[in-house]
Length: 199
Image 1 (cartoon, rainbow, N blue to C red):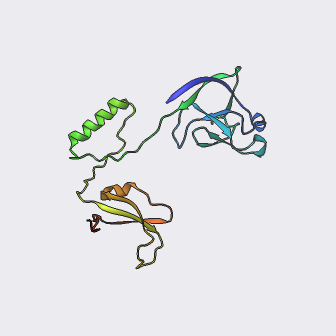
Image 2 (cartoon, rainbow, N blue to C red):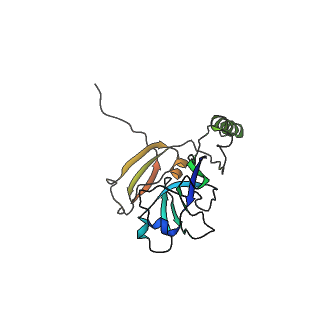
Image 3 (cartoon, rainbow, N blue to C red):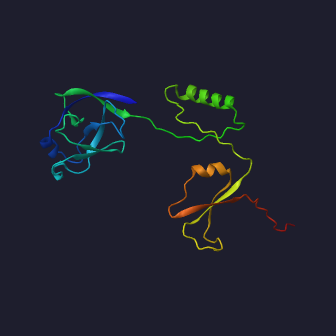
């Protein structure tokens, strides 16, 4: 998490009413119940004069919507840069969280530990963490994965099918999502044999 010190002051409800959607502000960076003791750059979702009582709604540069009651002392409030204010920590970047499903040939504990150690060495011990670990045996078979409309007629010829991927392992299907309004059809893999006569 990268932060920098910014001199800012907390605004009152009357002052916020005079702001437009182009004015840069700062709101609490805590999201989804995760309290962060810093602020994030943001903008109002509508001009301040359009909010009639209740909460002001701001959207941070990280895409989070925050509802702010400026007069509530228990909340972080809404701040604006001001040399006469006080120093606050402002979040500049917070990295990216990746959820990975890894295929490890052999699947031994030693190979998993080696992979984990290498990732921590490459990205930093404080960055790479095991949040949950599920070991799934991958059978040595392949399947063909198709998509077809979710409400396809029974006995349909399959003309509506759209071949999405070939030669994949069944366990990988768990990590894919069909297109909206479509469902997956998984069938045993059939090698494509080109029996076109050749000279």
